[in-house]
Image 1 (cartoon, helix red, strand yellow):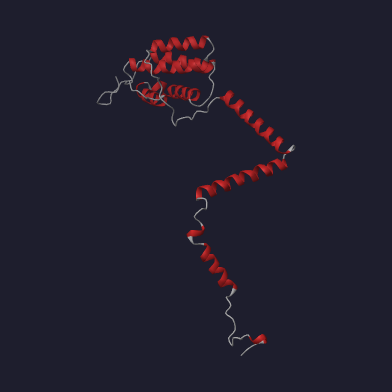
Image 2 (cartoon, rainbow, N blue to C red):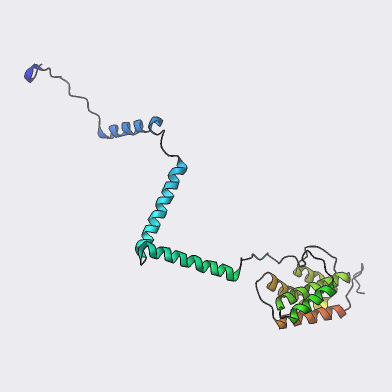
Length: 221
């Protein structure tokens, strides 16, 4: 069969590909590695998305800030200055160890030396340092009297609990002294004259108290 102009006409309709099948075929073709050899790697793509997000964030902030971008920059600088001033005023924050840290530092001093240092701090109005040295004097004195075994790393709470066995009459005062030491050393609190005088009086009283020594049979000596 021929059509106009003598051209042959096929008796069967032309083959057509459905739209969905064509799309899937195109996706399969474009997914071949040969088409993605020069694509950026995953890290580069993520980095681009991050910078795009930062750009959008600053753009939105600048649009909502009086003065636009310049106003946003001024606000950021003011916040940075405020943070720097707070850091300079308060210092680096210190984490308080659970239960307190070691009572003594690296230098090994006698009870008399700690008492002298405590009195010097008290005379100068440095009550926090005075409390610290007086507590160390008290515990060092108990070690010198062999009521406590010298032990590096002992905390104030541990010393108070151990000393209460030989000095039961001062158990509450020793616990209060340990709490005061931990509060000013690790809790960020400031001592005052009253706190120091209570600790000084306790140190003097403990020094004059005869210990309760328990023998193997449980009898007190």
